Length: 175
Image (cartoon, one colour):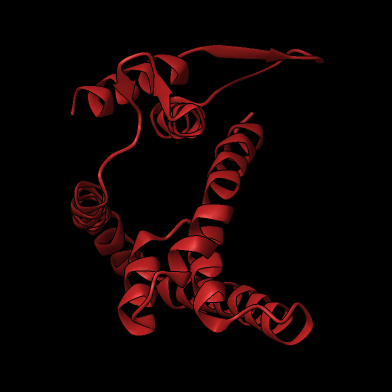
């Protein structure tokens, strides 16, 4: 647990560093991107002296499930007021419809290209789709239905890049 806590602390420090790009653009990885990048780096190192940067498999599963539960609880409690306000002021049907069309369209296109064109198994594709959408709830559902670890493989290959791109794009859009 020492390496886990140290890795998160290093990631939070990295997330607070401001990166300067040409043209005066600045960005931070933040509290999500910093630990993600640091986890990728430390995971690739595997060991630094006496510190092992890998969690045992059972601890990894426990932390992952706890993370999904806390994530979903946080989203629900944080979004409740906004959702109620949107319902009260109208326009919610349009938002739901546009969101459903965009989400379903991207998902169906990903599944069709992946399975028909690239010949990727549906279990792995379900993990890729969860990673593209950065949705741990979709990954949990895919793992339950697949009955194997293939969704984890797809998720792990796509999630880091998708998360970092979301962080960077959000900061560029809000400028």
